[in-house]
Each structure stands twice: as structure tokens, then as C-alpha cells.
Length: 283
Image 1 (cartoon, one colour):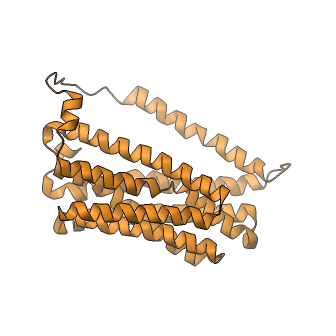
Image 2 (image 1 turned 135 degrees about the vertical axis):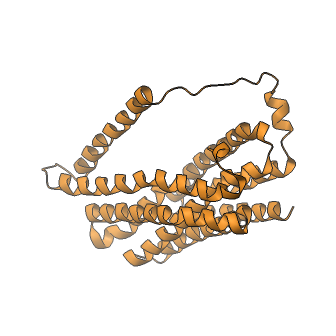
């Protein structure tokens, strides 16, 4: 997509792309909440039966997506570049971009999957709402997070095109660390207010919108066109490994110690990644 837009409009182009992609993440949880309410009315031996049915039904769109790729999406034309050597090209990437990848990786190690945010909201709401209703409200809060992301992705891209992509990304990382801090505080004070939790999910939607719209645009600004695809691959690898480590570590610390410690750890790592990104900005 990056070749189809000018450098001056990359932020809004990626913002529009992420907004369109996230629409599915809005409609899917809404359907899940509705199905969970319907399944609750069936006769089950325990509360888990309704959840199992909804999870099995979620397999259907996944299978349809695979079939759509196989049938509807043609293979793109590929022009090989035999002169491009992987390891030498990787070593030849700009040092500033390598520092940027390090900052993204540090932040990513704290950037837990937001399914854990859903679990956090469910856990906090169960004492006052019960298991099923707490899960439904948590699902709606996740929908709210996605609505926020859809609503702000394009405007964030426009602002970033005007004031600079990297400064806006730094601000987004600050919001990410704030989200983890607020979640830790919610557990510390046993918050069961839907309005407060909605505020946390609002921050989550904001920072994910910034992150997903601008990490790629900052990459495009730092590397040469000949190594852009490989640089995107490096960014994706760093993000993928970091997010796996993050979700696993937050889950383990939650189980072994407490959710306050888990989200506190995430906040510390995200803050460290923000400071590292700030240093890259000043290079």
C-alpha cells in the first residue's frame, strides 16, 4: 500500500486502512455478545456451555475467510531481485531504524493482548453482575474500544501528516503506558464501575489507533525504498515476538502474583519503550 500514496499522505492512508480493517472487530464482538445472550437461554449443565457454543460458531467466519483467500485473491506478480542479499541488507539498515526497532520491541514486550483487557473487565465486574452479564459487558467494552479506534484512526493520520509521524507515535506510546497503569489501579482499588472501565478501554482504542497507523509510516521514513519490504518484515517480526512475550508474561505474572503486578510490569515496559522512542526522535 505504501507505494500507492505520497509521503505527505501516508499517515491518513494508513489511518483509513486501519479504520476500515477494525470495522470487522466492531461487528464481530457485537455478534458475539448477541449470540451469548441467545445461548444463555438454552439449557446447559453449567455456565461454560453458552461460551463453548459461541466459540464453535466463531469457527464459521474463519473458514469462510480462508476460502475467500483461496478462491477470490489472485497471487500478486513478483519481480525477483537476486542482487539483494538478506543478511548484508539487514546489517546495512540505518542505525536510527535499528534503534527504532529496539524501542518498538521494548514497548511491545509490555503491550499485552487486549483479550487480557476483556478478561480484566470481566473479572472486576463478576462480583456485581455475575459471570454471564459481566462477560457481555466486557465484550461491549471491547466493541467500544474498537469503535474508538475506527473513529480516531483517520484523524490521527491527518494530524500526524501535519505535525510529524514520530512525535504523534510517542504520544500514542504514552497513552499505551497509561492504559496499563489505569488497569493496574482498577484492580488495586477493585473498581467495578462500567464508566471507569469504559474510560480505560477508550485510552486503549486511542493508543492502538496511533500504533497501528503510524509504526509503518515511521518505518517508511527511515529506510530506503529498496529495503522497505524487508524493513516492514523486521518490524512485523519484532512486534510479533514482543507481543507473544508480553501476553505470556502478563498472564503468568497475573496467575503467579496478582493482576496489579502483571499490569504494573506491562506499564513499566511500555514506559521504557516510550523513553527509548523519545531518544530516537531526538537523534
